Image (cartoon, rainbow, N blue to C red; front, side, top):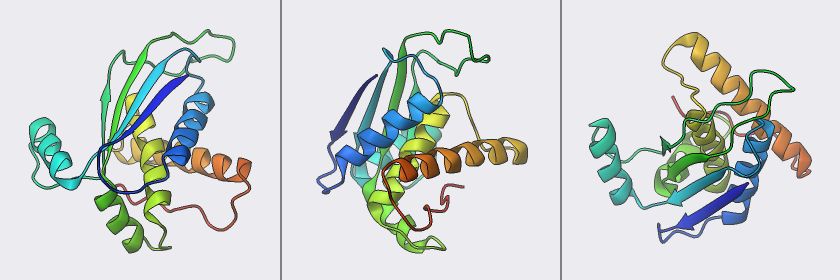
Length: 165
């Protein structure tokens, strides 16, 4: 899996953790290992411009996903996943920092960015959270991926609670 992390935000972030959690999420969702993903980290001003342009909503947001080839996880275990461009995830550390601090369990900006990376990957794969049943499925997968990744890294303590609504 080719994953590029490009930090244009001017904020010091754990780029390796974002790369690692993205790689884990994509593998867990059984996306073709030769597919490509891009993660771009931007400041609040750039995120606000994207938010207005693509969602017609004011202010910066935490994460945006821009799918390319509309890849989906294989429906069956023995099915070969297609190869392609998964798409782009755009993250905003300023929003992530605030959300992490305001989360019920409280967690770091980097933990929030890791959660948002998984959230973005799931959006690229067609998952959404508009309807209650969709939200339950997406947030359940998100929690399972984050918990699995944290366990694999030997991280202890509670996983970050979802702050994306």
